[in-house]
Image (cartoon, rainbow, N blue to C red; front, side, top):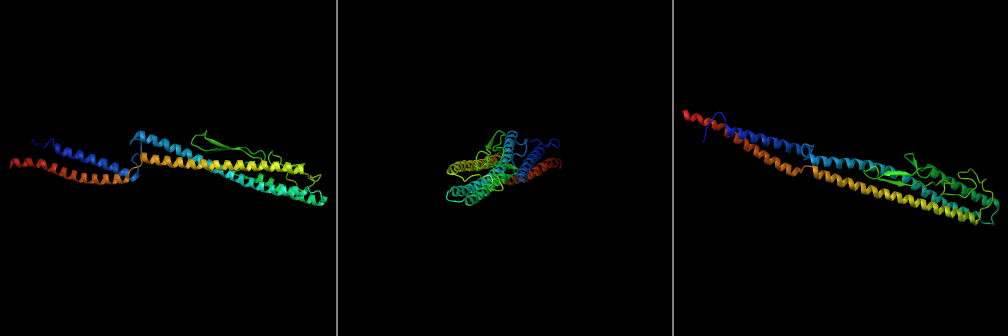
Length: 282
């Protein structure tokens, strides 16, 4: 065994060991404090880059979720108004059928047609006022609704506009002029069974439009459920990649603390070793 006051290899070895333990302990403290085992590219470049891409995808999905929520509001508003129009048309049909009774005098059937026109006016106002976020699928000239449903800009769903104003191609009151009207002056003659048949056809068209809006709304709900699930799964995947296991990190920290205590004792022993040389000169 060689004794030297210059090299002190045992002391240097103990110091290096303590430095390594302190560095590792600092990393464990950082993982416990942040809850992340990969907090930056310096920890693991490949994993960090993968997690960043996944985070970006989820941000894009969040934008799509906002688009779906807004689109759902537009379609829900349109659907509620369309259902109201359909209900009003059922009442209108009842008035129209009653007005075809040839046993009625002119005042009576005109009174029924006044009610028919007023109900039609209400239906038209529903279509004109079915607006959400300045978007209306039921008004004349209303455009189709395009909704972002995925992380890619090309992932869209289109909800077709349904013009339910009188004369718009779906709802047709069958009068000489389109509704709304202030009185029954546009009714020149008593309605006939042919007018009832034509109105029934229009009612079928409106019912079909209501059905299409209902299908569109359901489709948006399904897409939202899928999108939320994708976001949850992606978030869980990010967690699996970068989150620290705090239980394991805590156990590792305790083990490092014990090793540091042992290292301190080893350093004290190493520091005492050179003093043995003095005994040679006594």
